[in-house]
Image (cartoon, rainbow, N blue to C red):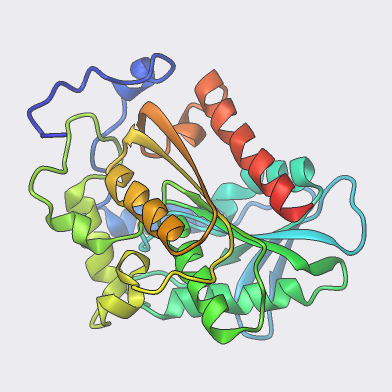
Length: 300
């Protein structure tokens, strides 16, 4: 959609809150402050959350289901933040919901952030957490999924590719919530839109530049990878007013063309991160229900 188009196309459940949200929250100027704020968030640990440090040095926040069978399913969750900020603690409530809804062990990984730690540091942290999770006695290694939102969704897609290539963990599913998949969207002239919230092309260009460093994007960027065959079934959810809308649908089509089962949940008038900002709205609850249903089937 061209940038001159009206921004009054928000979903009815989201129109009011959209008026108060910034279009761009992350930039080189705001990053140090935002990183400090998310660091403070990690200091709080709700009851029932196990905070662990693996032998690899990677931090993990473990959420066990209220009712479970052993061995049971598991989900490795990867937080968002444009590859440059965020923490596993920000998704404690979300991970608890996944654990209870799915009867699954959920591990949220504290991966290293760019620009201090560019590719492949964060991805290798996620892989270390994945192999640890799949080896837990309480986990059935045949029923392990990866998932994430925004940059976490991009890392989940990259992790699914890495797991396929290394052949140590056979994933059952990948849950990609408005994933940040393709750095080339930073350079599309007509992609930015006045209805975008929280993440714009400027933020996107900064996030990808910080994450890639000097890496080859054809290797590091999931949306650029040519061979998508042999990946686990995918769920991709995105709103039509999300900067990642176009690239996410393109990735879904490429997955299907490679023979990978892919369910797409496209939400008209939804902006980036809408489901966590407007958590109690019917549109957000339906979006989450679709995720639960897909993972239940994949991990059954």
